[in-house]
Image 1 (cartoon, helix red, strand yellow):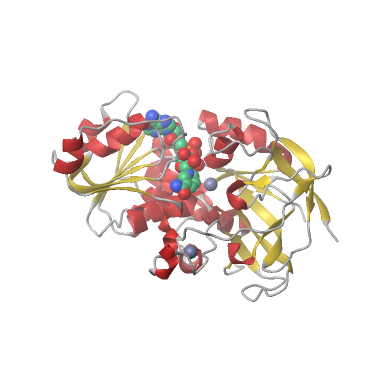
Image 2: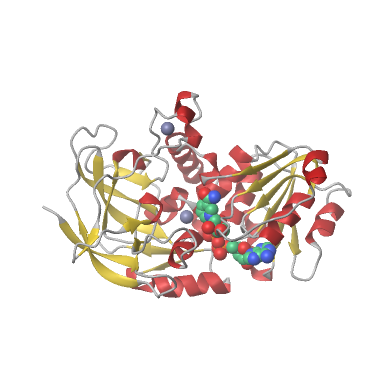
Length: 363
Ligand SMILES: NC(=O)c1ccc[n+]([C@@H]2O[C@H](COP(=O)([O-])OP(=O)(O)OC[C@H]3O[C@@H](n4cnc5c(N)ncnc54)[C@H](O)[C@@H]3O)[C@@H](O)[C@H]2O)c1
Ligand SMILES: [Zn+2]
Ligand SMILES: [Zn+2]
């Protein structure tokens, strides 16, 4: 028997999101239905709504969520009804060429539910990042459920499902920040502040936050920024060199995903430094760089999907750090909202008024 629940849908490019009745099928083989308890509003949801990811409208938005497994399909062994889980968008297949090389964090064939959730008229929905969690119940592949300690509230835990994990991992995994290194983070939203927190956890001694909004820079300090630069009125590259003995940083992280910002990150690093792109560009964005600079500076230019995380390894670890008071997930939660408030949350995000608005579901 399918479930009828309420969810947030982007029907067409740029149109305000609407609340719709969603039909969620019973879980088939390998699938699970999860009662969503909380789901953060990530900038990627807005990218979907703007048509910046692809044109497969209508989208069921939301993908940064935690909840309780309420039904499992045939053959599911990793989770059971009642388990408290964070949803992930990297359910590794174990069989693709990346997995076979032992590089599960790059899995090229991640699992999603096989069946489709639909609108009442049968229109198939594209769930954001293969999840779709601004909805009371969602259907996912069981591998997308990562069990964590239920002592962590869903408002905090869910954030690990996307933006916070992407930021922390951009610093710790992709950028491989080491003790005593210097790091610059461009864009201090949820993802950038998580990169700052990740750099701090990794032991970076200089952490420079760059944003065009002073309020964001103030918040960035709370996550561990040792210096801040407002790049609206200051040359960010020069300022960063000024804070690093004239050399630039060991690791420069672009958490915006804009060519001008990427260029700043590229030039703000020291010789042999690493540039990490974790912000998501739109398809029409291009960048031109002197090839001699790419060669001559050495180091690495990397992109960071999901912070190169392995949910099974990283989610429980970060929840443990949270519960021990060593990683403040609550600090990312600016407000809790209802399902009907997602459109306003996009506006607040756009105006820079929030780090994360988190939809909570009444039970
Ligand atoms: N790679 C991944 O796996 C992954 C995961 C989640 C989100 N993302 C992406 O990361 C990016 C950030 O997401 P978010 O949720 O933190 O967004 P956000 O809107 O909360 O934060 C973006 C921040 O960038 C700042 N900014 C904008 N233009 C800037 C500029 N020119 N220079 C410096 N700062 C500037 C804004 O003031 C804001 O503080 C988005 O592109 C999002 O799609 C990537
Ligand atoms: Zn794989
Ligand atoms: Zn996201």
